Amino acid sequence: MSIAVDPDALAETVAGFGSAHVLSTDGTKVRTVCADVTLAEGVFHVPRSRHTALNVESHPAITLLFPPTEHHGYSLIVDGDAQDTGTELLLAPTSAVLHRPAAHADGPVAPGGCEDDCRHL
Image 1 (cartoon, rainbow, N blue to C red):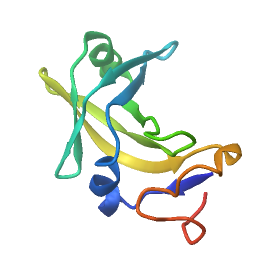
Image 2 (image 1 turned 60 degrees about the vertical axis):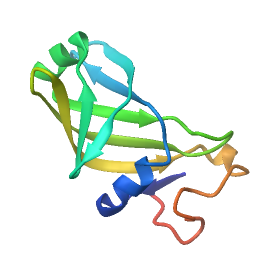
Image 3 (image 1 turned 45 degrees about the horizontal axis):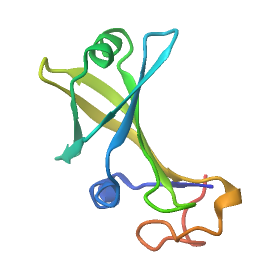
Image 4 (image 1 turned 90 degrees about the vertical axis):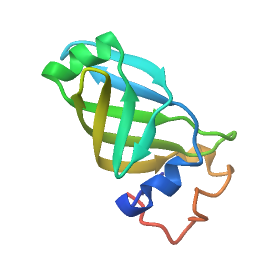
C-alpha cells in the first residue's frame, strides 16, 4: 500500500522518522549509504559521501528511504534530484510516498492518522 505525501506535509511527515538510506546509481550499480538528513525550506540537506557525490555528477536522481520506526510500520520514500555543493548534497524532492506491503496491514496507522481516507496509489 502506498500513500502519496503532500509536499506541504513533507516536513511534518519526515519528523517522525530517523536516519535515511541514500540510494544513488552510477548507471550500473546502486550505492546505498545511511545518513542523518535534514529538511529546510523544502530541500533535503544530505551529508556528502564520496561515492554518492560521484554518482550524482552523472545521475542526479536519488532516493531517500526512511525505514519504518515500528514493526509493520510505513517506510517513507522520497525521490528527487540532487546537486553537489562540494560540502553537502541538496535534494529537491519530486515525489514522496509512505509505503508498506499489504501483508503488513496489521501495523500502525500511517503518520498523520491517515487510514482508509488517504489517496492510495
